[in-house]
Length: 384
Image 1: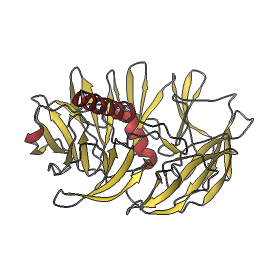
Image 2: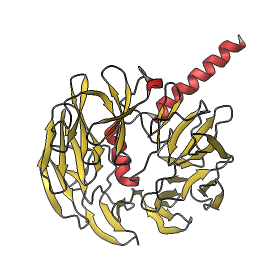
Image 3: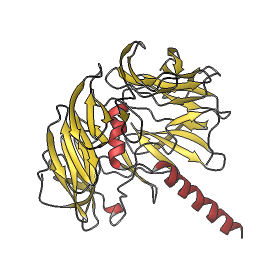
Image 4: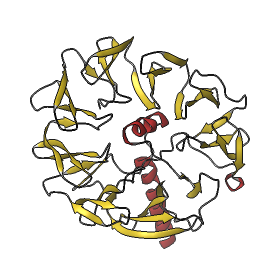
């Protein structure tokens, strides 16, 4: 009976990790990359069997069965018994070393950042360094905080939304009814008792406003600049606005923005997928899913297989794959072949090496490299 209870608990924990961490499709992952990145992922996690694989094909030894994410050679591990998180590092010999534990919530360290947002065992919010030490605790009036984007993180208090920097200083006072990530030095906010969106710079200065009488935020209603453009709906068309809220170009129909990488945007509408540049030129169009992979590459669905293509949708190699991961390091990516092999490919689609230990394993197309937490951490977290 005791073994059965243990098994059920473990199964529920795994299912919870899956539900919390893998609810976003690959285009939305690249969408986040445009805001936070580019991240330089050094390893890939297979969530079904908990194997941790470096981008050179080596499987990391002594893998903890609850590793949830690995970024910049740093992994984050759940202790399901108490819901605390431990930071580990991975050395050049593929060994895992414990750095520090006891976090109740944690964001990953984006490439180029030496700090990130975390919460201790009492859910007190603060900013930690790569040694896991709290450099500063945030003011107790701050209820939630989002991950850093361009050095700023959105916070919320009883007075509204604002921003803090990596030192924990409030750089833009919490006075907005909504606030979103910075990209290209600009962010979108809303003021209380006003339906308009406002564009601000990093000093909090208002650059322009986007009237709710004319424009509507595209799904999922989180207006953010990507590649210097803001996608909005204007009646029955989709428009791209610049930092001064001037229309750069428009497209008939209500398109959703699914991704933004390397100055290219991925949009979709009623089963049609387009890759466009920042001038509105359609580089490719497909009636099946398309994913931006970075390094001027995309993957294009064709039936049950996927092809590695250039931005114009032309096949790089004639060989189909089942799945292709993004080129996070701009040089290599994981892919699975039609005969069940896991391989590492370069941007020309050439096989560099094989990972025989993973032969036949599943690479789920919706595996997310983001941590299995909500997009914000809070003083009142939702427990696993």
